[in-house]
Image 1 (cartoon, rainbow, N blue to C red):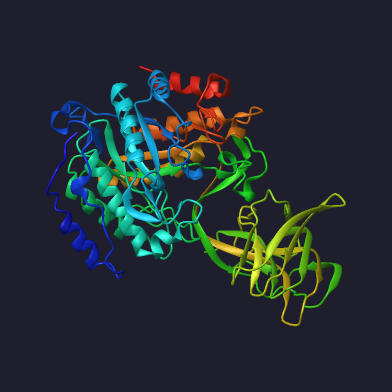
Image 2 (cartoon, rainbow, N blue to C red; image 1 turned 90 degrees about the vertical axis):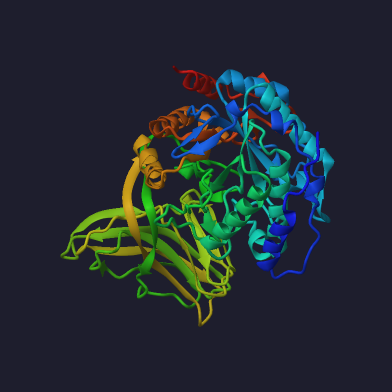
Length: 555
């Protein structure tokens, strides 16, 4: 190994200080970060770079990344995940036909919160060993910061990355150290900036930080590709903008990334961390529908009867509402229990549709009040709770302890309305502990922004991936499907997991998009299940492994 001096660190630190409101903090001396291997003698023929819409090697030949994720136990904050994989797993992947690994990193492998900017040599040693294995077995690595300073992003627990500038500075410095250490190494194909960013205020927050990260990396590394993922969400808002939540960076050696798990109720069925997807599901399913687009709340029927005093079970019949606004795309049920520190219960809720005469009943839609029906409790002050009960053979939804405006809605139980038709929501309601300011009612809520409604089949996958691929074509940049996969339950009892994976591969094959399956070894999404011990044939998802062998080795 050798030391590389004069990397213009002072320039980048001055830039960061200019845009930071925090006091100056000590930064690592990058002159002391060693360059891994023999960068001057690397084989340029195998180094990858962006060329328009494609990734090419040093010979100008197109290379398509076909990968799987090494999760490296990042969610468990395991500093050195020695039981996740070893060299044998690189051999296994090569034999399956994979040529790349999206390699997840937790910042705590390198840095402690109690000693920021001081990097652990054991972390570098572990990563060095993996780079050596990748080179030995002809595998490209995409190094991905999956858990940054400030917290894991995907589930909305990483606000501190966006609200505490010091965390951003630490992430920038860590990326600069990684970029310097592996500069020019042909098997470190790319530096993947941040997994599934969820900002606190705006998309611009992620765009600004991404630009800072690219600037810092390019100060010390001009060669490796950079992967930048589109914005996942802003706080609890999951809308998709006209740019499909992508943004373009000025750097020409950038690949743009998206993830795909739709329909989520299938791919994440019975996931322990997502209460709304606890019912088993199968794919394809012509009777399950998915809304395409990013519809948003558009209004509601606020003038339905209300209950503001304690009441035993009573039948509440809503007013018939004639739809006159053609901008309403969907109607769905909302159960309101506002300013009610007590409890409200709802059962046997139905939405009826009537002909334009207001009398002829066209259909009755029974609303599923079980926990499996994608109910979401909203409250203005984020207080209150809801639970689903089963009593006397009936599903009951209970809302309790709200001290502001609050309702529980199920936007997946929608009715596609027709202008001129009448709609009415009715059901049984019981209350306890209500006060004069309480408002309990059954309500119809509206959404607009709908593009299509498609059954759970390959057409759904095509329609949801197509807008992202179109963005790549319009901007003439390569795209990377950085994550796709489905949970263990999808492969049980003939629920269709293999068909879903095959259909996703069919769609991205049409575009020749680079892809990465999530993941290689973990409890939930995996080719090899289980934590705490290295992968073995006894815990292998053999049907899925055989599918990949077949698909990846096709001529």
